[in-house]
Amino acid sequence: MGIFWDLMQESKLDEQQKQADTMEERLSKVETELAETKEVLKKTLVALEKHLHKDIDGDGQAG
Image (cartoon, rainbow, N blue to C red):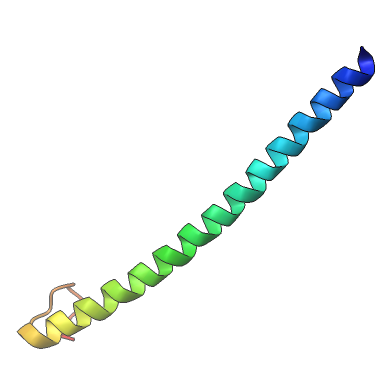
């Protein structure tokens, strides 16, 4: 019985490790997407400020 219990526990540990690896991959992807989104947002804001000739983000510059 002890051998089966050990095998079950080892299987559960392997499963948790795979989930953790997947979670790390997902987190990395989300971080990359966030950085890309921030870059697009920044470019959009600059273009909008230039178009309107207005300081929208309060940095003291239009564009």
